[in-house]
Length: 399
Ligand SMILES: Cc1cc2nc3c(=O)[nH]c(=O)nc-3n(C[C@H](O)[C@H](O)[C@H](O)COP(=O)(O)OP(=O)(O)OC[C@H]3O[C@@H](n4cnc5c(N)ncnc54)[C@H](O)[C@@H]3O)c2cc1C
Image 1 (tube, rainbow, N blue to C red):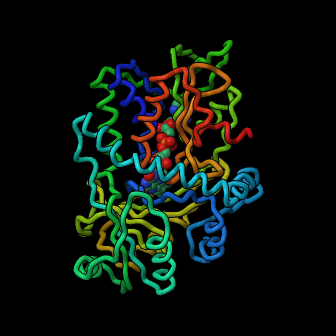
Image 2: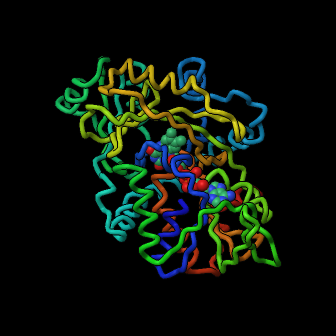
């Protein structure tokens, strides 16, 4: 998010300094499934998510795990409140519009940095192995709101091609159009970083220790004790944003929603768009750097070690599916930055005049990074324009 914003602002003539410890590989932006998911217009804070929880529970073979609910109780309370029908409807309306900007914004940003091939506009596929999964999936995707995406039953030939590589019988599936993937998240991040430098921007490898308020301005204090003065700041630190926003008196109730992946360098999976195995709640994406199987929704307080059972479960899915992979996969775990209503936070601080923010994109951060960068540029273009009326403004948590 920070990189996309920095590149967009730099290309528009701002002089940008990106501050990040650059522990490459650790943040969610490195480990995600690469799916530009414009079909996911319904915020996950909903009654339908709540109803599905019993069958989606980790202990029953599903993806959702809340090992210490009391430790995350305030966030869970906010989540429950956001499930209220009217709030969910309003969120869906806002998210649908925003997701409609996602692919054009990526197209434009990658075009502007001379790397259009990093976006692959080939849609994605959802497959079901069980009749229950098929019934529920069809109702949700064909009967529900999927924004600007289109879905239709996958044709026999395409299904046959996938089936030939799998060890489990596939009952049926859908082919989505309008969605996309990035050819590799690692290549994307390197390309954005290079584009920022090429355009005259700068990168500083450091951690922001905190923000210091002076009058109605915020200043940056680095972990090495140095201070950085800037006319304007954009806070886009993923799960780390909560602490920085608190320094300037802004309430951002973020949680770390962890996910896991395994990635094999050596494989014979065909060059097809991402495949969601919906009964298993996993997504398989072929990247330039290997074949990645990703999943899980785990709510834990910060600083907990990864739960190796999740990698074991991913491996069991890979074996059961008969994925054509060889050798040991690399195992990754990382946190999505998630707000209780499953909407992002994009806006301008009310407590200081030089801070904007862009974080909390939960499962949709890769999808929405370029579109968010455009919105942040809009905030810059009109400093007088208040962001308080936007559905993504943080004020919604103070009302
Ligand atoms: C398993 C998994 C699969 C996913 N799949 C998809 C997908 O297919 N499609 C999709 O759209 N989204 C997906 N996501 C979600 C997506 O990856 C995230 O929403 C997105 O990466 C968040 O980006 P971000 O830049 O806000 O946060 P991050 O990627 O966490 O980056 C935050 C950055 O801020 C820096 N930072 C933090 N604190 C400080 C500080 N104090 N000072 C300086 N720098 C700091 C960090 O070093 C880091 O570089 C997935 C997530 C997971 C876990």
